[in-house]
Image (cartoon, rainbow, N blue to C red; front, side, top):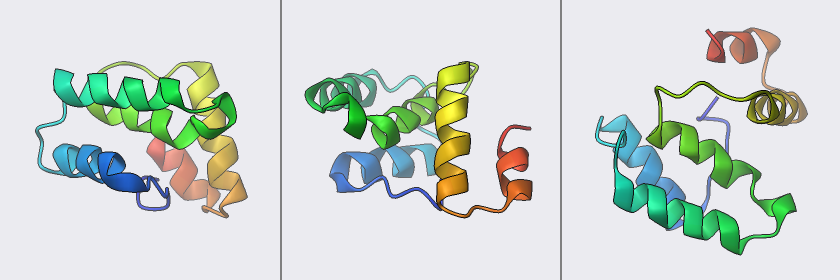
Length: 89
């Protein structure tokens, strides 16, 4: 699903690159910077930034709120249902 998401901004690109390179998990600097970014945004604009949290904490389960956001966003972006389902396996 990440390939469909527009994370935008340098911070989003940095988090995705760290994840792709296998160095995102446990990166406290990135996690702190991301939380600062999230908290600076209005709630209505936090969604894509909050999804980046799961890249920095890949072993933590998604809560139902984030899962519903991801499913709703993916549906709005016309991501095929099979890809949505695969993302949760």
